[in-house]
Length: 122
Image (cartoon, rainbow, N blue to C red; front, top):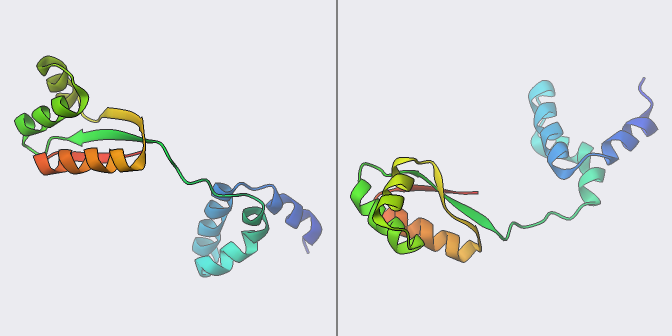
């Protein structure tokens, strides 16, 4: 039988992300529910506060076949010239803006998607 105290000590060293990965692995290996697996890794998660992301990068992932409309929108958002905006759109995936707050990131995403493009927030 494994030394339970040593196992608890090792689990306590896990980060939140590592604990989540452990939960997923245990679920797959043992066929247990994620809630039960997270309960096993619970001590690690209890000691760490989960930080909510407050800065986002807005990444253009494609033009959706509407390159001209997306280029116009990228120019309006970034202030880039025509050649630079065209290069950004044609070189997708590329960041449109980096380190923006959630509201601005969502606004930019909405504008690009309305023009026909696809966007990812990171």
